[in-house]
Length: 274
View 1 (cartoon, rainbow, N blue to C red):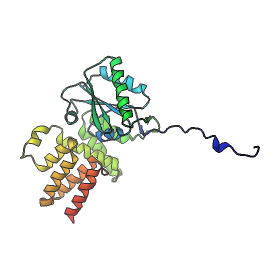
View 2 (cartoon, helix red, strand yellow; view 1 turned 90 degrees about the vertical axis):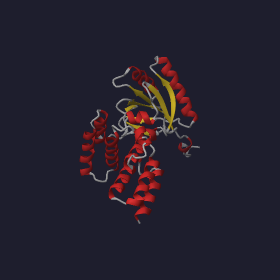
View 3 (cartoon, rainbow, N blue to C red; view 1 turned 180 degrees about the vertical axis):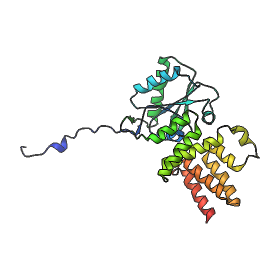
View 4 (tube, rainbow, N blue to C red; view 1 turned 45 degrees about the horizontal axis):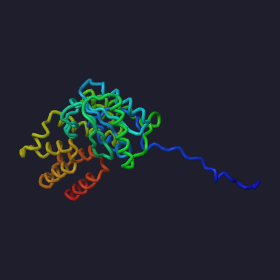
């Protein structure tokens, strides 16, 4: 046995790898990053707290419970007043309300403020639901997470309500990096928010006289991208204007160029062009 190499028989267990990297386990949600949050829910469950402006009592309990799980789930805070279109998209009528996202699907958790022990029970139940859906990984945080200071600055402007400021940040970044996908998507999202920030979504969608471009924007705002593209493509089929084409391309950026609905819509646009 003296000359035999046994190293291949004694292989140490490999450390598990995170399914994704984030800058923190708790983040602020807005229209600009909701698609990213939905994508993260494909890997770990995401708790979303819809809250009133300035409210922190429930958030502190949720954050304490989430951080104990060492990356097995994420927490997102959304101001139900400042982010009214997002609240409407998730059918939130009053706050505080806590829901979860599991593989992109909303899961109701509870309403109102709760004691810490009750919060812990809901978190434990969510982890059980996630595990039954195959979500047993964890996210990494800290230095391994990609941090873009320009995007962070733009997010901060959005969260403070300064949409024009966020637009200027993305526009300046694109002047230096015209093809940067992250900046293009960010600018498209901010432009959409500016166009729809004060819109009465339900009323305008119910009104047959609403312009196609406005209808498409509103549908995109609540996440109905396929319908939004159908509206603009139908209009483009007869008008074929550069403005309609530009609006379509911008909404492609908002939805994400690799998503199935964008791939189908882009193919339809190409067919209309040629």
